[in-house]
Length: 158
Image (cartoon, rainbow, N blue to C red; front, side, top):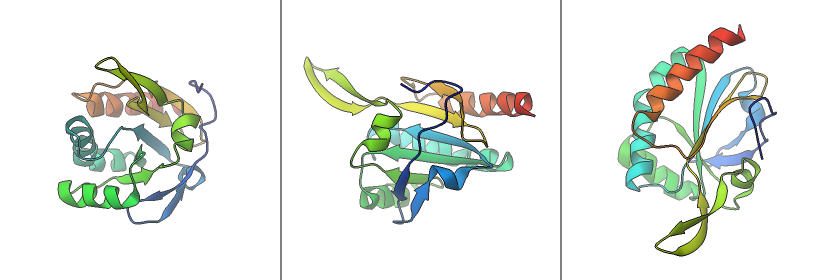
């Protein structure tokens, strides 16, 4: 289980353009890494659109925004194109990164158990340590909460 203050678990995943992205590539920058269940579902679409709409605000603070789900890079590319997204989407079809961040969990719906992503967001500082975790995220107002927390943490960090 990962906690605030821990070194963020490393990853090396492909984005929607089949480019490899590693956590190491983000060192020296603040990063938002958020995990979501599935492309083109209502909550996931709203979350991705909200992060994209506020991406300029994150960029002003030199913050990279990355979404990770178990969908394929092809699915991510279609998702990006369909909704004009401006964030990086990484594919974790093997669920390794999802497991390392402890967001791949047993869930229940209509009495049936299945494995899936628990919507979560991690704020990672320039040294690669976790500064804040949002678990079981509710999408409305989440991106605003993240931006506010980022500004607080960056001020505390200096």
